[in-house]
Amino acid sequence: MSEIPTHRKLAHLSPGELGELIDQYYAKKSIASLISRFSIDCVPSQLYKLLPPEISPESCPNCGGLMISERRARSTNNSLQKSGFYCRDCMHSGFVGCRCAYCQGRNRQKTNRSERHIIKAADLTLEQAVALLSFISCYPNRNVRHRGRFSPAKILNTPFAPSGDYGDNVITRLIEAGLLRQNNQSTSALGFSLHNGKCLPAQSSEISLTTDITPVLIEELESLISQCDWPMHWFEDFVDVAVNLAAAECKEFYKFCAAERDFPPIEDRLIDPIILDALEDFSPGQCMRIILSGAQYASDFLVKRSATPRMAARYMLEACQRFMDKARKERWELQSLRRSFYCPRSMISVILYDHILQTNDQGLNAVIALLQLPQKG
Image (cartoon, one colour):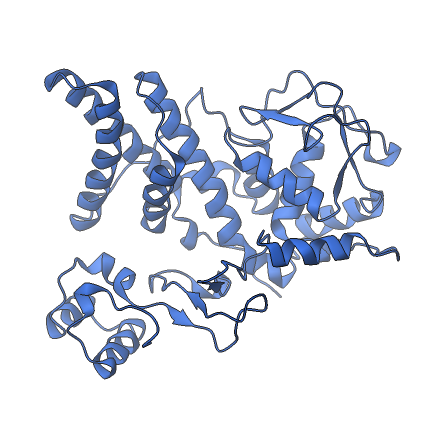
């Protein structure tokens, strides 16, 4: 642990005491008693965030640096979590879809192999399975068996993904994995465009399924889903896939609430940490409730203090954080917010929850780490 700086609130502990604190915390000893015993200045729900990260025995395969993993709350179902190790030097990650230079190079090597690799449904990551089925579902008039190119529809009642860069990133990873391809006549970087989460034409651009996406593969995929016969790595992927989707939905709602009040845009790097922090302990719908409350407080601040819209936009961030901290400390029973008409449910959400998890839109009302997954036989 000497290579990792200790949080200032734990700096008074010796290495032995710090190790004992970590062991006792995950042994589910009373958090309040641990805080008292080790003289730590924090609320119980935040203790795990002060703990130093776990260090992997393996070095980074890219640069040889230290691979670390942030501590998770002990209430999290760790059996459903991936290791989460990442390199603190080059940011290579153990997560599926890592886009560091090292992993992108490996993906290109796999894509450029001359021999044909037959993809099986169980080979797909959960994100790839959800995204492929969502992409196909957005074009109901096309038949995968005809292998036609998918020309983006002009009007879609259900968007592919929440607005923002989430959908672009998902499609990009499908292209990098060789599951979608951009056609030669494409005039844009990705061969398509997403506007507010909807696939729309980018001049003459089109994308298509690769020859690896066969009718047999789709049938295998549908069989795995209908029989709840998930590959083991889907269980490991689920929390990350669900959190990424929920974070995109909450960020879309945050930006809608701010724009509705004519607040100027705030950088994603300021919004993302608050949303991810909220999703540790609150459902996506509760997170939206926190965001709406923060927006309302910011509106009051704008009027009562004669503030500028930019000041109100900053205040909204702070109000969300304060509301969330107080809700945690006082153990509020927050009611989940319903989906806004202006932030409609995406096809990715429909596929993940209605078809794969078979819970309909109940994921909006549940803390992601506590969702019940199918039992692996």
